[in-house]
Amino acid sequence: MNFEMINVKCYSGYRVNEHPVSFTFQERNWEVSKIVDRWYEGGLKAEQPAQDYFKIITKDGEEFILRYNGLFDAWGILIK
Image (cartoon, rainbow, N blue to C red):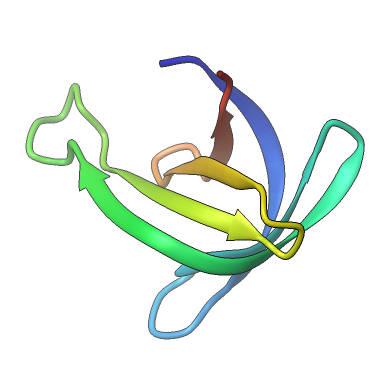
C-alpha cells in the first residue's frame, strides 16, 4: 500500500491526535464527515511501530483511508 504524506487537523480528547477532523490533499481542504472504520497495526515489536488507520467519508461524499504513525507523528493518505 502506498501512502502520501498529508497535513491533518485532529480532535485531541483523552489522547493527542485521537481522530482526524480535516486534511489537505491535492491542494484542497477536506472535512471529515464520518469515520466508517478504524483499526490498528503493529506496536508489538520495535521494528513495527504502531499505526492507526481511519476509513473516512468527507462532507463531499468521498471515501479515503488515512494512516497515523505515532512514532514519527506523521499522517498519510492511501493512494489508489
